[in-house]
Length: 229
Ligand SMILES: Nc1ncnc2c1ncn2[C@@H]1O[C@H](COP(=O)(O)OP(=O)(O)OP(=O)(O)O)[C@@H](O)[C@H]1O
Ligand SMILES: [Mg+2]
Image (cartoon, rainbow, N blue to C red; front, side):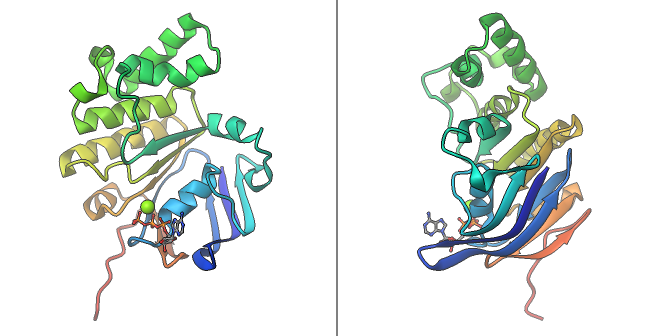
């Protein structure tokens, strides 16, 4: 579902990703870990075409997204759910309207909007909060709204860059478990994180980046802890 082939990305001469090769299959759940500056966000931004690589190929669902025209980028984004560390909710709009936003922008019939938003809010457990403003919700609840918004259009791929970066450990675990439930419904999920306890508890695939390179990639893995010994 997600494939990177010999991907190289630099920012003004400084490499951020070096010869990255990666394949994440349909419905797979994987963590992307590594120290600050390792290239996690850069890799995510290549997947949602916020950036393009200097060399190599990125494909999503068999489509080479490095070659998309500007007009085709919104079509790609419709097939991706993206979850952000800082939630990026519209502060003056209700939970319902935040989740409905993309569907309405696509001109979806209001009856279908209602049905699909209700279904997404049920998955994240926020049916009761649909008329609230984001500011009246906890951080974990706000992130659930972000997840509902990401899945409302039924994307085959869900990308989350540090989705628990602003949350306490208990809430972080709940959010990651929610993302795992979503992957069990057939969505390919990639989560970047430095949260060692969560990665170790989940026993999922762990792809580790260091200085722009994939240094390990293991199934049912644990976070690579650097030792000086
Ligand atoms: N827009 C940019 N312009 C210039 N350099 C950048 C840009 N974005 C990232 N970099 C550099 O690319 C490298 C990889 O950064 P990236 O943000 O991908 O790392 P990260 O693994 O997400 O780190 P963090 O854990 O701190 O979020 C770093 O050296 C960073 O300074
Ligand atoms: Mg980052």
